[in-house]
Image 1: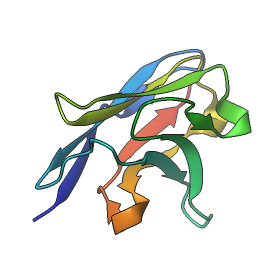
Image 2: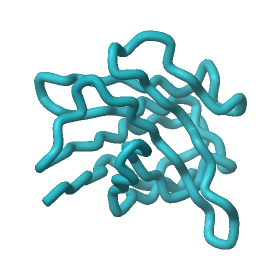
Image 3: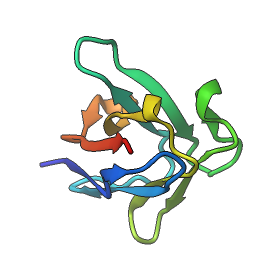
Length: 114
């Protein structure tokens, strides 16, 4: 059974940082494109960042470019999202996914508030 488990969410003040992690069981991330999405209640889920199987040329939502960094550790079978200079508009539930197989985690809440 495949499980993606996100961790690292929390509440931080504006300008703060968080590092989200996605760990897989029953599945190996290696060679697959992995993405982070976020969703606010009542709004559509939006793609925040994606990283190809070889780790080259990650893609980012325009609003997070220069602040977020997606990375992968295939040895540990994890994909991370380093989020810096967080803003209130980054508040959302963040999900990791492997779209090719429609695998999704349960999400981790990020709240940016003073």
